[in-house]
Length: 116
Length: 117
Image 1: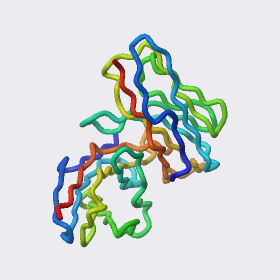
Image 2 (image 1 turned 30 degrees about the vertical axis):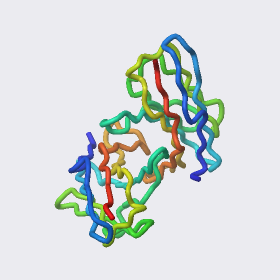
Image 3 (image 1 turned 90 degrees about the vertical axis):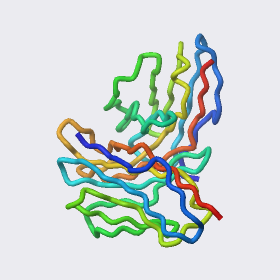
Image 4 (image 1 turned 180 degrees about the vertical axis):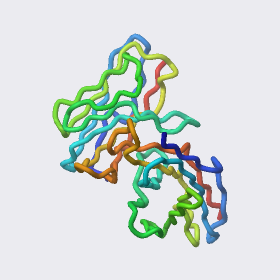
């Protein structure tokens, strides 16, 4: 138990569906992240939120839409996905210090997404 | 740009044998280095991290890693493997390179460790 929870743990959706992934952190952190983990590929950082403001968007297709309503919650809204979007989606949080880059990221268990 | 290379996508050892998982990094600034472990159907868990203090870092579950600047390496070791060590291990680097974002991690592709009885 890392203090980061994700729901649902498994999700199967068709290409025309709209769904959302939810992440919640109970660690009092000020930064949250979405990663995509596909087979045989490194973890890909998708989005970063520092103090609820999106600071990074690594060229993610617009069919993925993040939302960070407060520093404890992070959503990933999905619509018109493709089969190649099937992957494990991991959420993480950290406490970003003002001048340090050593903050440890704590990961949730992930949502296993299958797009049919 | 920062990068991480993990040599060997799959390593197999016998129970009780030495575990050695290799990680080399590239960074134009002093790096911060991490090892994470991922058990099946779970997220990533931090094993240890290097933050420019001692070059030999001890982590959880008996693992340790040594930062060698001259070799740009941060290999993970454990003297005696246990069946419960079977998992996938990820090396990651972080650092404020030009254009980089604070706190962002760059991960290697991972090494899957199998432990034979």
